[in-house]
Length: 461
Ligand code: ARG
Image: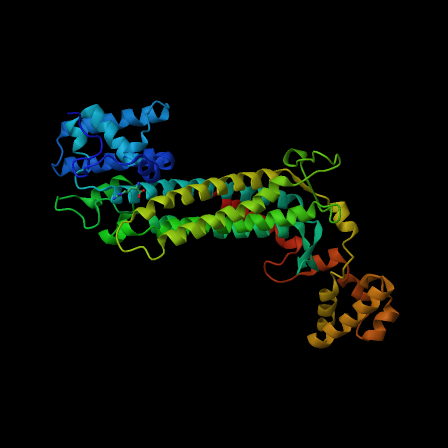
């Protein structure tokens, strides 16, 4: 009789139904864990050998077999057979086919439950580093662009209405700051997940003398997990990783929204390079920011992944449940999507020009200097609330007369407050105001050199 391929075919009277085979398999999407599955198996085998549960010869056969399998997968020669369900059983079956009895000893003291919990952690540890490296490149692209525009002034918006004048660099560095927090969140996620569940077995550990600290250190984990039940039951770190991706995407969607608006004829603040625009099949004049629209839209897919994973985890009975298998669909989808979005954002930031002349031609529209005028009055001893009222009335008058505050005569100013004198004009106009900010981290051109230097050093680390 031919050897059964699946270890439980002695237990179940019937072969798995073909519908069930398709329904239960994860090999189609978990094959990307193969490197980590093999690394975990090698560490496990090394430990089994040290504990005299494998001979040196068994270990050699297992390692040689696993290396061969890794090469076959990399060369596209490995046959992924979905009846074997997942990457763990596909590799184990291939190993047994190659080396026989030594291969049959590999799963000693191990379950797919601790195996998959180990694999996904190993994969995520690397993936976090990939995403962090991409974030770093995007931050550097923002800093490089900011360096070009430290002295150029643009309006800042609140409620999407003109608010106060700022250095364009300060606007750009706001994204560097957001991305820095995204990076820290990922770092924290990596710290939390970087403990080894291997040796937890199916749920309770094993009666064999497994050395969990040994496999943990061979795999570069900082420690072992301290509860075998929790080790195989939870994937909270997967939800956390997807959440971190969601927040990155939230930040990128703000960038996308800003720049879609900034590139309209109405705003005309920026020009996105042609290489990152599309046109219309009907309207010949169009330059559409489709990449940014997709970046904004993909936030929806990411939030969907988060909702999926949270729902999978909700109210699961303690212990491993097969529901958990689908975590990988959402984790992989989130990581693929966020990688593509960060790459795209980076390319667009590297290829966008701010139309500084157009922006400065309109900088005195919208009373961006009104707050600075109120602060001028405060410096002359007027209580802020009173100053706010005076400037509010001045703005209302200027708006009626279609003038800027800077076009108001001293005589007219005096009608509103007699403390105003000739020096008031130094406190008006976009450039003057942006240059007058005195608080730490303010959006003034003078602050930018120090901030840019800070980021340059920080991002090299
Ligand atoms: N492919 C499975 C997963 O991703 C492996 C664990 C299966 N364990 C089990 N006891 N059926 O979760």
